[in-house]
Amino acid sequence: MKQANIAAQLYTLRDYLKTPEDIESTLRRVKAIGYDAVQVSGMGPIDPEKLKQLADEIGLTICATHISYDRLTKDLPAVIREHQLWNCKYVGLGAMPPEYRSDEAGYVRLASEFSAIGAELAKHGLQFVYHNHKFEYTKFGERTGMDVLLEESASPDFGFELDMYWVQAGGANPVEWVNKVKGRMQVIHLKDMEIVEDQQVFAEVGRGNLNWSAIIEACRSTGVEWYVVEQDQCRRDPFESLTISYNYLKQLI
Image (cartoon, rainbow, N blue to C red; front, side, top):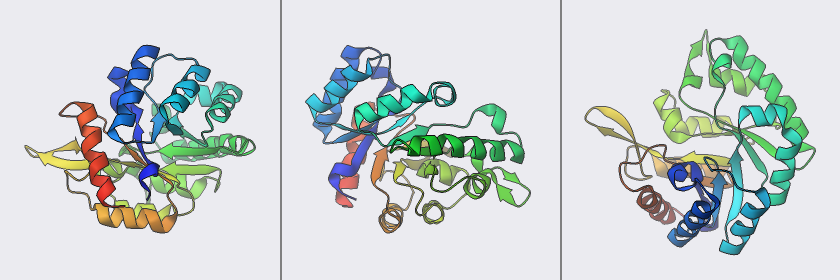
């Protein structure tokens, strides 16, 4: 992991990304924390060319995105053009639509459909990545939903963007899963899990109970390129949360 490869997932700051003016101000604050890269998600309307201009002017790489299911299935040529404009290789699906989640057949169907989408993206130098939550660790017989996605999808066209908090919340081992997707994951999501009043809560990296030294070592050994800090909910100012996580990760470089 290099300092330049620590990125901020903009979904963390979604309340500060409503207008183009908000977006510019927020990107400047992210850069001031020390981040050199961002993942685009949770952002209000902005012209793709304007976003590219702002990122270049401020000095931020757009390393990955989360794109809606509808756009990936119905508007793929435009998605491809935007990512090429941004010099952004990694095209992410942030969550599986609910209609796929109820049985193993749904996971098989998503693995097949997005392997085909991933193959089309690959023709243009792009990589599809799937971001998990905990529901993918539901068991269907002997396999979890994540097992199904891994085994039934086409490698390397169907890539992964594991979220360490959600792997842990699903009852799985984060380090084990980093190793399971070796060769198929170049982007990872980092957030910690803390126990507060007997409840699991989102926490800044290093403030919870995940084994970060082991996780980062597994990422290094499996070729992870981008280390993306995300916090779905913050119990303090989200810019402060991103700062805490960034400063902790710098110690692990």
